[in-house]
Image 1 (cartoon, rainbow, N blue to C red):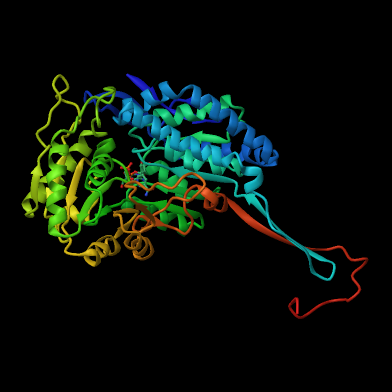
Image 2 (tube, rainbow, N blue to C red; image 1 turned 180 degrees about the horizontal axis):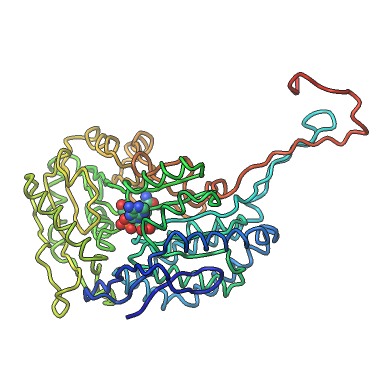
Length: 498
Ligand code: NAD
């Protein structure tokens, strides 16, 4: 049995806690490796290593730091095929989708290559008599990222690239369900010239997370995962004086207006609802057709498409999506579908019984489609995180707008329409962080920021884009005077520029 350890101080080290977790092959359902779960002491050793390496890294000029990122990009691109295969073998997403996962992470590395420019501060010449004022952005020290299973390359890179570029040392605590790609990313950074100790990976569970949350040497924590844990990480990290940003779960709606191009809307729903088996925080899980006629037309086209979804091995180039990540995830999703039926939603396509011939123990599930879901139902209120789409029929535009606006989650939302006025009104008024207009998964590009509202995001700065540079640095403002000599004596009144 393969063992997966940690990456500390520039090398892979085995775990010493004696505790491990199973890493599955989601296609077969078999355990393919054991990942070490770090003890408090192991995490503390990683933090000590990072703290020792950070000052020299911060002292490198930003262009030199950017060059390491550039070299990393080259190495990762050259290894794209094998990285995608490795990612897919633990997560279960298809190979092309795994490449997308890696590529969206690399795009944030590309953004962070602009660090010499991004770190520039402000300067005011002559802010007062003989006084210049300027601000600079300095690294925080040792910072950490705690990441979920569903994007094992992208989200670690969203955290690591800006953190390192700013001159911090970084501790990654990836998901214990698919830990191999994060370790490989750390190795590639080392190969790219990153000094040992600047990027460490500690695998683990609550014990590792709690150590990160409470250790005084950790200055900032970026978390992505479910809202319950996000809230816990936010509250605990803040209580220990750290800067914390946490991104949580989602329930993303797609509004289909009567004038929408119905074929385009159905294509969008199929990809955004069922791609990656629905295990995306920006997946569409609720479709909201406006008016009964729209709803009937939508269902007429949607049902056969859901029935025809090709569920396959993650290595199958023709598969629309592969297995879920674990048996526990599969059972949780099936449980939600049972609950929806019990609460009176109409299950018009039932994928619960799907099995893959020859892979009967794999974590596969067919696409499920519910019609006539209402806002009181559990399947509407909670995040399912599986290949399940709920259709909530809205009488009119205002009712449709109110659904995502009132939902406790506020990550992404989309509207499909040909009416620019409706689209503009929707984008202005909806209480959700990321909006798509005829775009089902509006994940902002690396140079904008990514973040949801309400219970989808805790903290005040988003991921990547300019916010990430603010998050991983502290501002120092310098007021300087070079007079020929201080002639005025002591000043007891607060200085103003009157
Ligand atoms: P999760 O909350 O189970 O795990 C996230 C991280 O927290 C992992 O590293 C895990 O080891 C750790 N963790 C788990 N339980 C913990 C505990 N009790 N105490 C301390 N740490 C703990 O999430 P997941 O299942 O890996 O990922 C799926 C979730 O992530 C979904 O809810 C999805 O919407 C969300 N997500 C959100 C975004 C976003 O940007 N908003 C992006 C991707 C995923």
